[in-house]
Length: 373
Image (cartoon, rainbow, N blue to C red; front, top):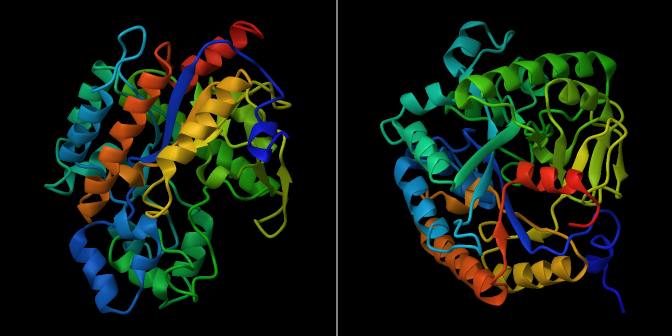
């Protein structure tokens, strides 16, 4: 009997090659600014410990990247290449003080590389990015300008005191209802509206994001992943115009029909299929997210999903967010997860000696060269 996990691996493009991609979202974005801020939330009774992204996620430090790169470089594929992270990156973060000075009426942002410079812990981190890129361990792709719905966020901030305003005062925006039930809006989805006026804004936002990406990295991002997997097909022609050819995501796309009040789901985003705008879909079919479920056996589950992907002629596209590799807030997070990642990668290489570690845009190019490679 064919299982549900197998079904979404059957349609679409196929390959004989054992290709492994690790797609990792949220790089460059602020979340919890520091352990001191985390402790202040707890002191005020705001339960940031209930959300793994608030509990663990933070701007990456040089040491965290060095530790991650050490694990990635500890394995080699059949071509002698190490494992590589496709680092889906936001290019900017809010400038909180300028927003406050404008009484929350106008939004201000800065390149994420500038955000690093405000903290001694993160100063020089971008140099580590460059080292990872030079050693084929870390490959940035575009995740948006910021991991934030600016319109919703400013609207709530303008209304006066709230948990959202408290978070702003402490230098962050990424709280959810898991943290406090009074939070009615979800700010993390940057593109979760289908209204025409918002689509026009998204086009401007995406254009600025790609321009910043090119300035930061010196090349166009050929793949794109929307924050929270939610976007309207109306933004896709803009992506194409900006040089994007491949769209990351899961088999299910959440499509907003209005201002995030009504959505529909497309469950046909199979690996290698094309959207109406011609974007090639790079469906994620494996998951390694130990920070979200510490008691779940992600190694066994991920290996089973990889086996199913290969069985049906698909690349094994592993979803693994940045939060899994950050230890600044709680070192136990990386102490637990980095050995798990190493175990996963070591097992992959041992079980499939002909494995090839590639990036998302490389997968896109392989797919577009032919149906069966």
